[in-house]
Length: 413
Image (cartoon, rainbow, N blue to C red; front, side, top):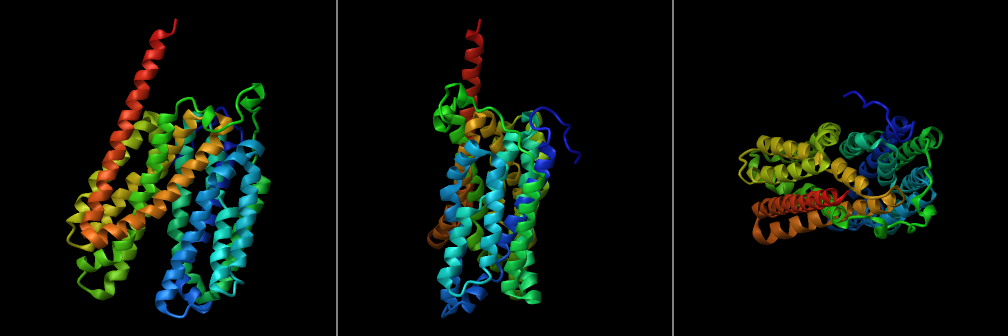
């Protein structure tokens, strides 16, 4: 797809975009590449049993996202105050150091602590979203955010594949060192190539210091936070049951993990392919329409997943669902961007990032709980109902906003 033409906003917005895409891809790939070998590493660090290794692996992996969700609004606030580029430089350097230190830990507690620290000092991808949203011409925002989202999802897709390959070639600890070096390259590129055009903040004219008080209309922004949470919730709710569900569909037990891997990757691949294109569509027809359509389509696609009879059908449906999910994130961010002033954009988008982490944590928890008590089909039903509810809520919000805008226009002299 050809890049949109230059317009207003930063003269360097396209170069900033591509550097941010590379940086987000490398940081997310580095954070997810440990998935295939994390239990083995935990055992090397002293876990006494397989059960203990699995348990500590979950704690270590989740620690990063918990920490990142807690500090995302803070980094967004600092980005509004001191600039977006310094936040990207801080995140890339911090992650390069912590990723390398993961290769020298000696105990499980040190591993968990370092993963938690990585979440605290990281946040490159969320910082890049703020940079792109505020430096890109408004009528090209969704396309740019979609391109960035594709890079993020590609990192999620490539990370586990690289993590399954490298430890056998260079060892687990050297894999962390290599990942840290790759993120350090992102630090160098961000420092040298990203050019941020600082605007005179509106608060200099006597306006508030930024935050929720400066948002003219809260309802659309709240709806976007809920939609961001639903995006990750829908994507992650099936994760705890995929392998067990696939085992019911695949006759050959040796093929279960292979098919489950395809099912897990299908949604990510669909999102990578769809994000830039759906983002471009959102620029043309409006992000609210895209958000409502994507939520509704996801709700529809979850229903036939209950009735599949083989692994191929499930892979295809998850791929199609990934196509719909891929369009949500850039459209959600675009709506937030258009409803929030520049000097508060980082702070509010930080909350949008936290909402995604909430969905990423609650999705697997809810999916596993419901599957254990009501059966695996109930997971699809629950997620589908939530997606339809999200679509209906967004319809109500945007209709209400349109009516308010029409009334204001009619009252204008």
